[in-house]
Length: 313
Image 1: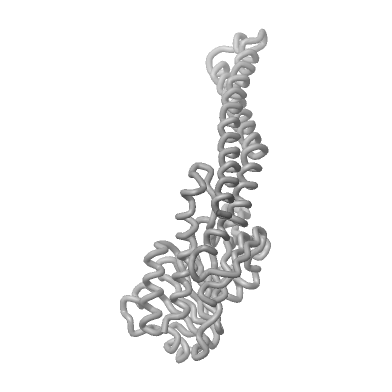
Image 2 (image 1 turned 60 degrees about the vertical axis):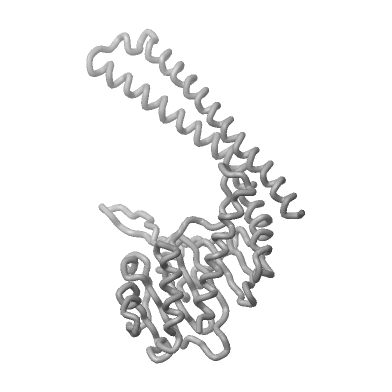
């Protein structure tokens, strides 16, 4: 009943944001017509295009069209930011902080959920996990932190974006390294613990995703796994103990399902998984709230699959 009431409230917020979007589109078209009319009046005044000929007239018309286009686009963007984005952000925040928690809590095994919109992993967390290149601390960002337990295993999952400053053509610019989610799960069973880092990277994504690596590169007995992944470990013997055939199969299955850049790090009693993908749990203005439950469940499956890797024997 509570979830149903929440759906109805969120649906009203979604429709409000959607209707405001339509209003902004209409206003933008009206403003475009106004700017065209103003441009026409400016072009046809006494000292306007009538005093020009040839290429000068063409340049003058081009300048008028360019100014009209820039002002019209700028007005549309300004209206969208002031009116639509505010309404969507309010809807999205309520969607994530209330509805997402309710839906995930209804899935068997999830409990003690807490959502922190502006929370996330710190830059030091990402650097120490070594699942992705942490980039420059000045340009690091992490938000949308969801914490809780799944089948008595504690987890944290958050959007993470790492960037670095690069110099190209004598100019500095900020370049994105990684944008996606990172999840941290506690803990191994009492008999297994990783001594130092065990890092697992897909080879085809290594060049633009990897930061620092553990000193020993190892190879497992699974040749298919070896051809696809590179493994680096602080303690080689311990790595073979952790990377059982069952766990290796689950890692490959996870990578297949995600179908994108993935990395895995075992450290102490924790498992870190990083996946390059769109922001999780985001609400859509174009789809009824009741139909977005499927998307939430799919995001929750990310946590469930990562947990299966952690507990694999």
